[in-house]
Amino acid sequence: MLELRPNCELCDKDLPPNSDDACICTYECTFCRECVDNILMNVCPNCGGGFEKRPVRPKTARHDGVSLKSHPASTKRIHTKYTKNEITAFSNLAKDIPASER
Image 1 (cartoon, helix red, strand yellow):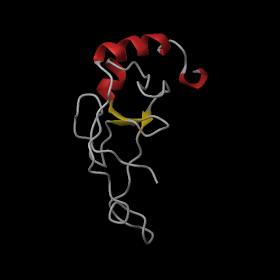
Image 2 (cartoon, one colour):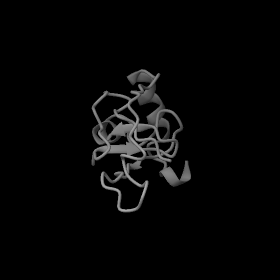
Image 3 (cartoon, rainbow, N blue to C red):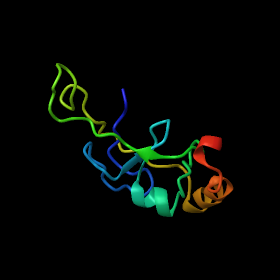
Image 4 (cartoon, one colour):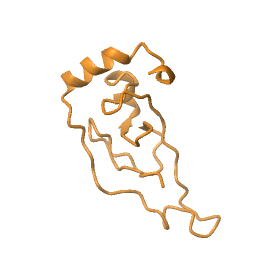
């Protein structure tokens, strides 16, 4: 089950479950679109992979047990352990390599 994290791990912006601004990597690291585009340069500071728009989990169950009510979003806020300087240096190494080739 995809963990819907409540915040951008860099700037701490709130990213509710229905946010169109949330981006995730393959390990579910979660960042806002602004940080992904302008600071991370589409390079996850944790794994080096790229980002995709996080899907929205439906509020309304159209099948039993399939909704936010049955599988709520996480409330645990997570923050990256890397400094902005470390992130910039790491992103610069991979930003010009397509995510599919990293």
